[in-house]
Length: 423
View 1 (cartoon, rainbow, N blue to C red):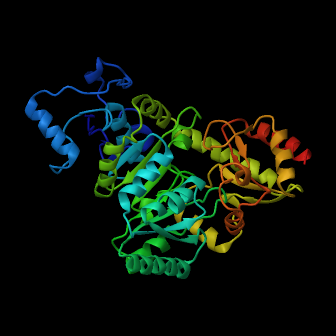
View 2 (tube, rainbow, N blue to C red; view 1 turned 90 degrees about the horizontal axis):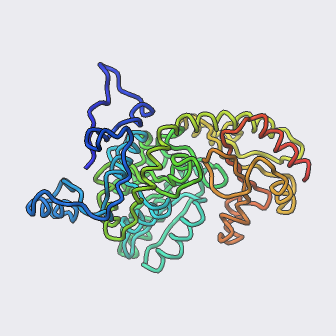
View 3 (cartoon, rainbow, N blue to C red; view 1 turned 30 degrees about the horizontal axis):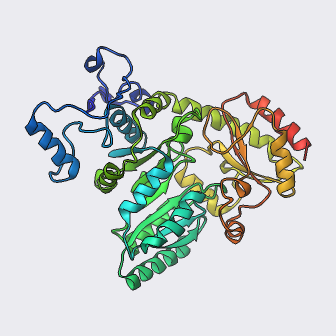
């Protein structure tokens, strides 16, 4: 088990997350004085006594409240994962966190733990294509239905979606099991009014938890738990990992919300491995520095792109023109992020010419890494989404998704300038 460090304050001062990332949950004295936690490459852990082994298993299996008192087996957890979960919870001001082998492992484990036959999920749209596909196809085979609403919906439209979901659940003999949001939405950057969703939930379905994919802005630029969300979802591959060298996922929230997910994770083994957890511990030490630099770079790049004759428009949170979206940004967000949509004048051919001409930015999917990445969602990450659905959600053939890294901003501007010249 990890050390529950009490060094979170100095006098009356509460230490910042960037400071706590350097030691929270770890005591070097327990690991031969090693400054950094070792990678615990073991499949199993020894028990101090048979009675202790019984107690540990009672906690793991839920036969005794309070959770595990000690480590049992690496499918359930280990020191690296526990330290990582402690530190992730700090960033999100959450009671607890869980880590997974990928973002989709986190999402699918959450959905399977939350829903049963006859239940209904209400979700915003668009979602990441794999998330939408899992809800629409895989969960449908289990008798789980969904109702969706557009990311930019107002309170009336959100109320209507929840009402439809509740009515459908009642007709099917199930529950309105989960409200699942993604904000900003991938790849359009459309924002969901989390406070409006929370208010609608309180009025129509007070027991239904709200989960939100916070990958695009968290953990630095948005804190949805402050606005009524219950569970935060992450692809930790992105900003938390930040070096494009690992794949992982995470959930943060209240312990009672996460305990059912933890139990299913224990069973199906979707936990993050020790080496990846250790790499994430390394990355969390610099996440604030990396995100701050990338955000500043994105602001400079978008200032250049905004009036370029070959750019139709930008989906960048620092330049929102819609009044409703601007209001959500003002209430919910602490920064504009570094991932945005660039709409090239033209269609797929023009977008491809732009992408193929880039020299510094890499043509690859993903986001939140130290390097700048560019991709074409309609032909890549969202290729599996039906054409009619893509049109409905604004995922057009001239949409290019850009994730700005930590290179020199003027060098990036020069790269985009020469690439646009090829269009």
